[in-house]
Amino acid sequence: MGVELSLMGKMILSVVVGGLVGLFLYLYNVMLLKPKILRSKLTKQGIRGPSPSFLLGNIPEMKKIQLQVISEQQNKAALSLAHNWPSTVFPFFEKWTDEYGPMFLYSTGNMQMIYVADVEMVKELSLCTSLSLGKPSYLTKERGTNSRSWPYFLKWPSLGSSKEDYCS
View: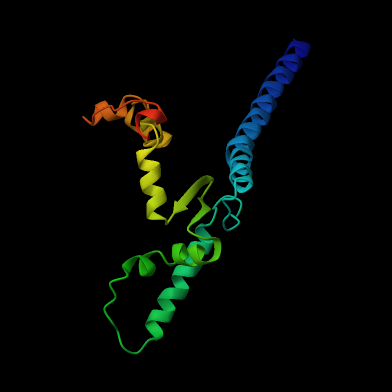
């Protein structure tokens, strides 16, 4: 009886340890490895940006830049009406555009984002890509649709799926 309990305890312990190792490997893959691989692929293609921190990405740097801009605005004696609101609301984009160019890579948490400030490039991307590029995967999962059916779901016309359908 004591041997059976000892054997049962060892089996339960090994299953728990195996589960914890599996969970650790999964979290390592999702939180560290995949974002790092994606970032390195984009860097090889010439898209660079500020270095992210471990779990928060560039969020701490974004907050720091916003606080600097707010303190600079509070130090000004005369308040003026500015129509350039994006530089007030998103000062980090302006700073990074000056530093890295009109297209750069930044991250919010472990999600890598590409910022494109060149209007002509955005127009080219929107005209010369399939509809599967149009909706991020996290939104398709949230809405319960796949990337092929989301235009129909929103009652948008389905125009085709190849680059030749959009660009001459």
